[in-house]
Length: 245
Image (cartoon, rainbow, N blue to C red):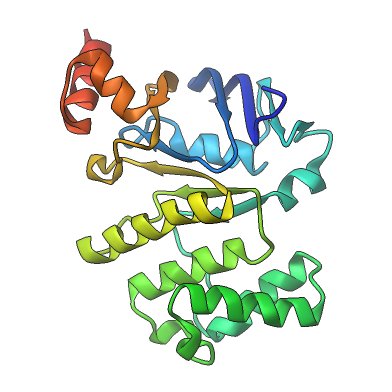
C-alpha cells in the first residue's frame, strides 16, 4: 500500500467503553472515486475525523502519500480537502472572502490565491457570485462554495462527509457527476461517505461500512456481479441482511 494516497491499517477507535471502529484497513489509489456506504451510526463520520486528525486512533495507523499522519501532521493536512456534513462557511463574509480566509490558513501567496479563487469559482459556475455574501446563496450554491474552498490548495485527497444531504435531486446529480469528473481530469482521489444508495454508481470503488467494520472494498459493478445482483440497492440490502443474521 506504499503507493496509496491513503492507507489505513487495522484502525480502531471507541468512545469510552463503546467500540465505534474495529480493525479498519482500506487503501485508496490516485484518481479514483470511493463511495463509503453505510447507515447512520456506522462510524463514517468518526472515520473521517480520524483521517483529518480531529480524533486520534486508539490502534492501527493512517498514512497519506506514504507518510504516517501522526508523525507528519502538517504534511498530511496539506494533502487533504474536507467538506463536512454541517456547513462551516461564514454566512456574513462574501464567497471570495470565505475562500481567501481558507487560502491564508494554507499559507498561499496572494497572487496565487486570487488566481485559484477565480479558477475554482469559474469551475463551479459561481464566478458571478464572488462578491455576494454566503447568506444570500441557496443550499446547493453553498455546497459548491465549500467544495471549491476544499480544492483551493489542490489537495491530493478530497473528503466529503455526507456532503449532498439536504440538496434537491437535480443539484445532487449535477454535483456527483462533476465530482467524478474531477477524479478523471484532475487525478484527485475522492472519499465520499453517504447513506443515500442512489448516489453510488457502478464504476465507483465501493466501501461498505457496517457496525464499525469494513465489509467490502471493491469496484461496485464487480461486487454486484459477484453477488449476482443487478443494482446497488440489492447489493447493499443483501449485505445488510447477512450482517443482521
